[in-house]
Image (cartoon, rainbow, N blue to C red):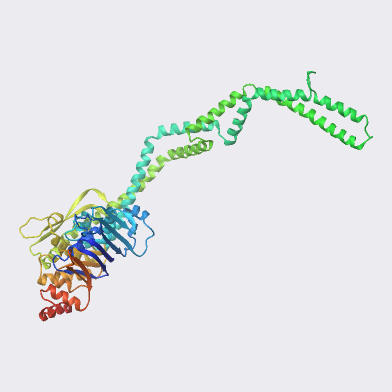
Length: 565
């Protein structure tokens, strides 16, 4: 339901604010006062294209804003999933807005966030059904014509259609899964060979991040083996010479130790130093031996450098192929194993999905046939009921039919599309409603359809909770106008209905009445919108009856209309 409508600087309207509610709301005013401006404002709000020159002269932009109480589950629709991700958390109100610059550029807003005109159309189409001379003629869309027929079929039919939609989605999901499995199976052997080769290459190396680090350290050591051997050998010879040349630190320490032992026991201080000499000689002798053994072991590893280089080359080759590190190589090996397992079970998976698809498709076929039969049976009844309504609504001589055509491919709504055909006047061949109906004819035809569909309950008919009728009273009057008003009022018992009208018979039935009035103001006239109540409603009805507030006959007639309502 629309709660508020605000308009600024749109043609003659400098500023207008309408606080709306449930039931029937009418907008009235003199011809040229700006009633159609409000219709155009609604059209902009629902993603319509702005016409040239709609910005009030002297203003930089026009602005239209609508506040709605959204229906439950509005954003559950998959078509709105992307928009839902961009919006803040939803609350009890939904705000749509449109800015139109004087230079023609437009900007759409949803909940204060930048959006597109397409976003407004997607959302607006679920909130408002607009029937008249503007762009949003939902009745002329094939899907909405099918909605009307399905609503006429009843609540049980709509439940079965919802079940078909779920089954259809399940079928599409299984078909996509089956296609993916078959595509994988088609490349089964080539992919299996590649995966097996890559896994065998990795397993042959048995990569380990700790080993790779050790190998790199060993390679560096082996590349410097001569320098290491020279350093160790030279150090060992200097500590304990075997050649008889050069230093012999062990021998020198031994000589010092003998000299100290010669006077052992004479002075405790020297005895302590002699003990340290002994320890130092033993440690030096051990160190010299360790250095010789280290040098000997280096000389006992012929070909080891080549082995280390080869293994590191294999590490580096695998890392380049599979992500740049040992960890990525190991992760790739796990993926290869999982893919091979999946390929092994692909045939079994295909059989399982094929069986599931056959079962769900059979259920979908049965449900679609049931819906098709119900639509075929209901179509002539709907046409007959609408013909009766059209006669009451001032379209005597019009013919109306509901044609059901098969689709080339099933959709979530079934196997057929619906085309509503109308011949507004006797002797004229019937043609699709979208091609022949004027704004007034379209509005009255929709009113007839909605009146018939609403017999199925408050939720029957169009999905949008707010219905807007423009030109519904074009070319009618008297009892026909009263009949139109009664049907509008009946529709308004279960949803919000907004009607732009010039007929007092319709306006008198309103739960809420707004008057649009053009007033002079310097060089530029402006239009004001005000809500009427009590005596001001009678005054407006008098004007619409051709009188004025002081005309007793007009006042009695206006009061009689209100009493009859």
